[in-house]
Image 1 (cartoon, one colour):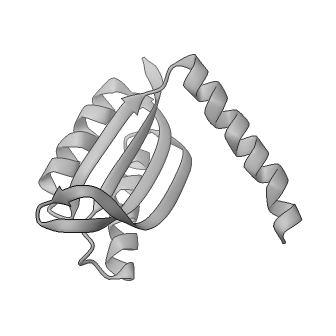
Image 2 (image 1 turned 30 degrees about the vertical axis):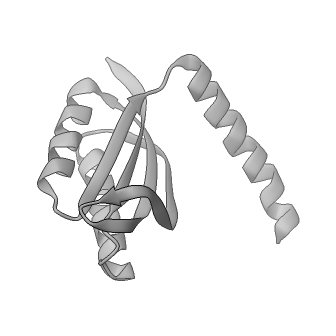
Image 3 (image 1 turned 120 degrees about the vertical axis):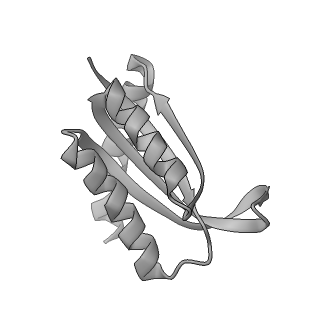
Length: 117
């Protein structure tokens, strides 16, 4: 059964910009290889953590919204755990209300974008 998920992961702050992008691409490719449909991939950049994780007080945040089988999410989380560059992650299954909210938010952002340019 295909469900819609949202995953946020935090990369260690000691990575260079290039290493960070390479890691993000690795996980996006991981999803694509397993027939997941990526709906949104958004890098939030470097943010301060609410509390230290592995003696680090900041990290690169990345959000990815996708549709996939349940097994793909299990495999993705195992891959997160095996990668030392990931210091924290959270994946949630979106219900119909969250999906509608995200679509509405993306639509609103798309309408506001040309006004900024």
